[in-house]
Every structure is written in structure tokens, then in C-alpha cells.
Length: 282
Length: 151
Ligand SMILES: Cc1cc2nc3c(=O)[nH]c(=O)nc-3n(C[C@H](O)[C@H](O)[C@H](O)COP(=O)(O)OP(=O)(O)OC[C@H]3O[C@@H](n4cnc5c(N)ncnc54)[C@H](O)[C@@H]3O)c2cc1C
Ligand code: FES
Ligand code: FES
Image 1 (cartoon, rainbow over the protein chains, first blue to last red):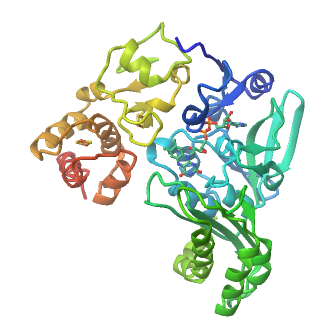
Image 2 (image 1 turned 90 degrees about the vertical axis):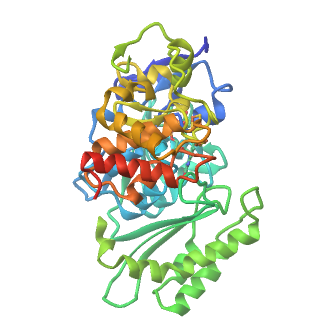
Image 3 (image 1 turned 45 degrees about the vertical axis):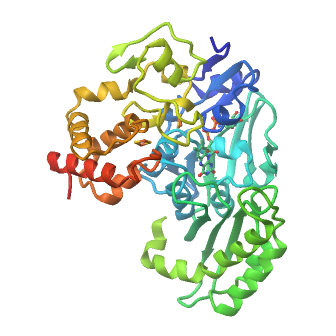
């Protein structure tokens, strides 16, 4: 016998109550890999909450509300489309089997600097809907990220949804060793608006993964990326070096990561142009 | 839960679904390769969707339909795929095959236009150390054309 007790949360308020004394599990794609033996005896299954609400819905203020407990494959087949950056990250995530289980809530709570869903959330100014027996709070995604494996979620709190700003142009790319089942060596998400028909950009947001203790918003590069002209793009690729603090690990050296991220920035005009009319996926 | 259409009770809800399938039910077609979601040899259908049974707790499958490789024999796409895998001599050691069959059968039974790319994506979570995938992919494509699904 495993000795574990799996408590099933049938409603959100049941989840609030159960999470006060037990650890949540959703897709299990991190918990069963990293922590099952170390995990507490009591686990709360959040995976049954997904069917109770629409996985993706549009709010009156224009934001897109995405369930944090629905499997990723359910999110991308919903009738309301999610911003392109999130759709791109899900399309390249792990494998079909993992996408049928893994959730956004688990990806955030796991706290990996290489979490693929977090950079898209950052460039969509995500507000994370957190709750527990102590009540609810709305937290900007950046305020949840502290360091590898750490978040500001209090014990007993769980993530119900994320609200994404309706960005016009966005995308996500990751470099990994292969297309499926690859953890990011570096990743980059972006969003911006285009005030005119030229290369000028406004409201630029850039966020990078696997180059700092958490996913980072790259504000220096954002300020430099005033347009998609080569001089501005070059300046952004240089500026982003001051936004990041990469390290050497088994997947790549810090030096490689810095150079590869500059490369992803330099390719932004090409990627944006290639998308052409497709950018309005939202 | 129902496994291959039969109601199952008396299992440990905190155990991995993979262990319940292999040890409690004695269905040894489902294999354990890595135990961490990377290889796909433990793939089963949960309410029709391929998942890694090494990463599902048995209690999470309660009240749901589980289909293992043994259960594919009764579905037309599964039976055709099995024939084609043999005809194409697409197996070597065979360890990956139950997982490949589960992923590919799910793909065949719900995809209108099966293409080489769609097959490669559908089995991208199933590692095969022997075949190099070429014969696996052509076996799946031929099974699809038998159903009229191959474009
Ligand atoms: C083979 C494989 C490939 C992978 N590939 C990728 C990849 O390409 N990119 C990537 O970013 N990740 C990848 N991962 C990691 C993992 O799949 C993701 O981090 C996933 O999003 C985790 O979600 P989950 O629902 O499975 O989390 P779980 O394993 O259920 O939980 C993970 C952690 O979060 C907590 N938790 C879960 N849900 C909530 C919630 N709603 N509120 C609060 N806490 C919660 C749990 O207590 C646990 O600590 C991969 C994993 C595997 C096994
Ligand atoms: S044993 Fe489950 S994926 Fe390898
Ligand atoms: S036939 Fe040996 S692993 Fe696929």
C-alpha cells in the first residue's frame, strides 16, 4: 500500500477546506516526478474541478480568464482563444500525454525558472486568482515568483485561474534539445502593440525563462525595443544582458544562454513578420 | 474506475495508476520505462485521452474509463494498427509498442485527415530506442488509409 490518502475536491470551497491541511495535486506531472516520496500523506486532487467551469472565458473588461486546474490540451481546444504567446508555449510543451494532464496552476506553483507557461503569463500582465480557507486574493504573476521552487503562495492557498490582458501581438519561443519533451535552455515571450502601420512598437513586454532564479521581465530590453528596426533590435539584444543572471548547469553554460537569448531577440522581426495576419490570434 | 470496460474496485487510491494496472489487475501489456513521464511506454487512455499512467494517481481515475493496450483489441482502429505493425515489421524489442499503439489508436480514431506530421506529433511522447520511427509511422499511415482517414 502507498500509505497516501487522496482527498478529492469536488467543489472550489471543498478545495479551500481540504488544502488547509493537505497538499494539492492537479496533473501530477511535477509532483509524481519530484516529490511523491517526500510529499505529505494527504493530497488534495484538484483535477476534478476543471470540468465545473469553462476552461477559457472572456470577462466584461476584455481580459481572458483561463482555468489554472484544466489540462493544457483542454485550454487550447476551448472555443475562446488564448493569447498567441500562451498558445505557442502550450503547443511546444512536453508531449501529448503530458499536455492532457499538466496545468497552469502546477506550472506556476512548481516555481521552475524554466517553466514554459510563466513567460507568456508575464507578458500578458497576468493576474493570478489565488484562494484558500482564509479568503481570496488577486496577485500579479510577478509577485508570486521568488526563486527556484519558491513562490509567495501561503500554506493552504491554491490557484484557481489566471486573468490575461487582451494583448494584440504576442508570441513565445523556446530553445531546447529537441521539439518534444525538452526543458527550455532559454525561452522568450513577447507582447506589444503597433501604433501605426510602420515598425514602431508600444507597450512592449518581454519575459525570459531559464536565465535567472525566476522567469524575469526584461524591462531594459523593453525600453530599448522602440521599433523592429535593426538598430533598436540590436540595442534590445544588448540591453537584455543586464536583465538576466544566467548560470551554468547541465543543459547549457551561462555564456551560451546569454548569447542564445540575444539571438532570440534579434530574430523577433523575422518571427513577427512571418506571422503576418496570423498575429491577431486573439 | 472501469478498465477496458470492466468495473474495478479495491485498489489503493494513492498508488500510481500504472501499478494498479500491472500489479492489482495483472494487465502486463502496459510497461514501465522511465517512471517519470518521459518515455510513454506506460501510456493508457483516460476517458479517451492518452496519459502517462506513471504520473496519474489511481484515485484520480476513479469514476473514469481507462483503456490499456489489451482493451484496444476490441476497437477496429486498434485491431487494424496491430496488423499493420506486424506487416511492416515495425517492432524490434517491442517495449515501446503498447504505448505507441495506445497513442496512435487514439489519434486514428478521432482524426479526419491523418498525415505523416500528425502521426509524428501524436507519437512524439513515445520514445522508441530501436526502430528509428520510420516503419512505425508508415504502419500507422497504412492503418489510417484502411479506415479512409489517410489524406
Ligand atoms: C516528461 C515531462 C515533460 C515536461 N515538460 C515540460 C515543459 O516542456 N515545460 C514546462 O514548463 N514544464 C514541463 N514539465 C513540468 C510539468 O509538466 C509542468 O510544470 C506542469 O505544468 C505541472 O502541472 P501539474 O498540474 O502536473 O502539477 P502537479 O504535479 O499536480 O503539481 C506541481 C506542484 O504544484 C502544486 N499545485 C498543483 N496545482 C496547484 C494549484 N492549482 N494551486 C496551487 N498549487 C498547485 C502541487 O502541490 C505541486 O507542488 C514536464 C514534466 C514532465 C514529467
Ligand atoms: S514509464 Fe511512464 S512515461 Fe516512462
Ligand atoms: S521497438 Fe524497441 S523501443 Fe521501440
